[in-house]
Image (cartoon, rainbow, N blue to C red; front, side, top):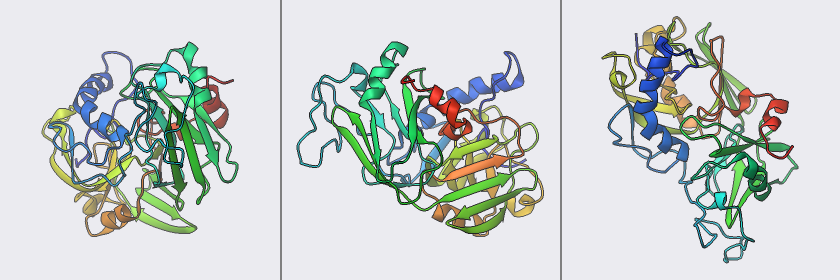
Length: 341
């Protein structure tokens, strides 16, 4: 057995199963880390004390500016004139709203726009809230909002926007949450990494070039999530402790070049055991391991938030709200999640 951090996280299972018991422990152990990671703060969650800890700054800029109750402004919430953008009595839910992307940031082709709220938005209020959320692009990209049940939040506390297909590289995007909170960001080059757990290989497609990298994924019974995940952030080192996620004393230590994939704790990271098993056998606790001969560092260095990691050949598909699993829904199903039919 090798590293991981509770790996593929919680599985949907009937009460009383091993998976459901482990799920309860996992939610408790990773709650603080996941909340911080999904807020995408600059400093990460160093020192949370259990489950996962990160060392050093996250590779994503600070993106936690919020709408201030009473003033209608927040963070970089200006309209380009230096004055706060006026707004006529926005829905109360927008007070304290947060956006996951920083102003001026460059993100990968899979990054959804994710807005979270301080309190759950009732179904009857969601259409009004959506009408305040405006997304514009310089190339007419088609997209839709959809209400997502976040892994660590109540129903109605998160709504995401994604295009019909991955963003086109170079697209300029503006999102206006209302009440003076606006973001301008750019879609960078395309990078999609596909992990085939059966062949123990990751195929990285970047701007028309292809590279194949040997990997080791989740061992049987600790399978890596199947489906499409989006990089939320990355850290140079992450501390992982198996005792906090139901795996006894299997591992406890720092792991380098950690690319964060799910709120429940799935990473793609450097793993010394990959020196032996990458390309041959799946031996992790759910994470995807890369060799420490420079392979993991080379992959880490080219990753930006919003890049896509797809896992094929595994079992259960990652939930939409476990990190950014938005792409695991087809377009028609995605649009059904909007309150504006």
